[in-house]
Length: 159
Image (tube, rainbow, N blue to C red):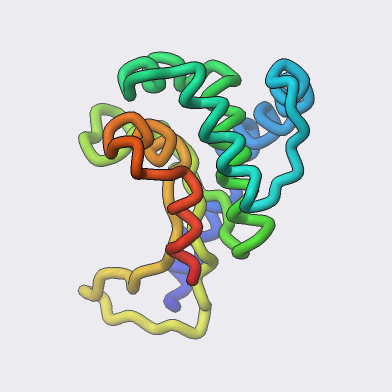
């Protein structure tokens, strides 16, 4: 991996914007958990419990999108990402700058498998596929893809 790519990778995985968001969600987690009335253990099996909580609260992706900053969605997204980090080794990433009117980015944090620094790329190569996802997108997708879609399906990317 070139020094430029390695530097950019590090910048997206450790920046004030991401770190502030992570700290905010972690601090809100105990209250979110208490309000849910359930125990949360960060295991893959708890994603069914998270999905049930979200499906009881929302019925459309528009409702989820409108509540994206509220703890019910933001902490849920953080929890989904943390399950992946703790069990599959993904790492949080976020654009260090808030995207302005960019159609392909909403600026929300996402998880991604770490880059192997031994991987080399040609200047014009696209990055190789690395498993990961945006937990906000996955939560919204619950209300688009239909009832057969399950939140735990995101974990199948790591097999």
